[in-house]
Image 1: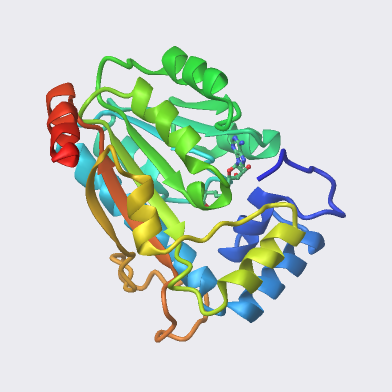
Image 2: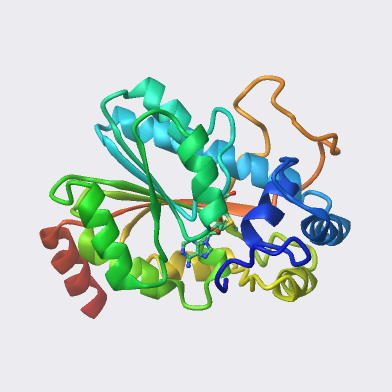
Length: 269
Ligand SMILES: C[S@@+](CC[C@H](N)C(=O)[O-])C[C@H]1O[C@@H](n2cnc3c(N)ncnc32)[C@H](O)[C@@H]1O
C-alpha cells in the first residue's frame, strides 16, 4: 500500500476499510470503492468482522499464556471494544501499542484508544524505522504479540516485514495474522484490481502460499476464520448468514534458537 492520501476526493486505505465495516470515518470516494468491493464480494464486510473476532479471541488467548505486550501494526481507525480495548480490561498491566502511518488514524487512536495505549506514527515497511519505534515503546527482551490484520495481504513482499519482526522479537512472541485468501474469494483478480485502482494494491494468497510465508516460525494455525461471531448478536451489517468467509487467520510463534537450528537440520535431511 502506498503512503496515505488524505484528500477527500481520493480513496484512502484506512477509510475504505472503515467504510467496509460500516464505520463513519469515511467519505464518498471511499464509499465508492466499498460499493465496488461489496458488489464483487458481498461477504467482504462479514469477512472483515469475523477476521476481527479472530484477532480478538487470539489476543485473549495469548493473555492467558502470559503475553503482556501487544502491538497492532497498521491498526486502522479504532473501533469500540476492539482487541486493544479488550486487552486493557483483561490484563490492565499490558503494554499496548497502536502503529499506523496515517496521521488521521493516529489522531483518532490518541482520542479513542484505551488509556495508556501508545500511538506510534511509523512506516512498517521501513525495517529501521519499525525496529526503532518498537524498541522505544516495548521491552524487546520479553515476548510481544504483533497483530497483522489485513496488512500482509497488502504487501507485495511481506517477507521483508516478517524478517524484521523475526529478527527483533524474542522466542515465544507471536504473530496474529488475517489475510484474504485467493482460494476463498470467488474472483480474487477482480477484487485486487479494485483495491489497486484505489491506490492500495492487494495480494490475496492461498493457504499454501500463506503457510509458506511463515516458514521459519512455529505455525500454530492457518485456517479460514470462523464464520460465526463469538459475540452473541454481534452482526453489525445486514448480510446473508450463509455468506462465505474469505479470510485466513494465522497464528505463528517465534522459535527459540535451539528449535530453529533443529528445524534447519530437519529441513536438510
Ligand atoms: C487495510 S487497513 C487494515 C486496518 C486494520 N488492521 C483492520 O484490520 O481493519 C491497513 C492499515 O495499515 C495502515 N498502513 C498502510 N501502509 C502502512 C505502512 N507502510 N506503515 C504503517 N501503516 C500502514 C493504513 O493506514 C491502514 O490503517
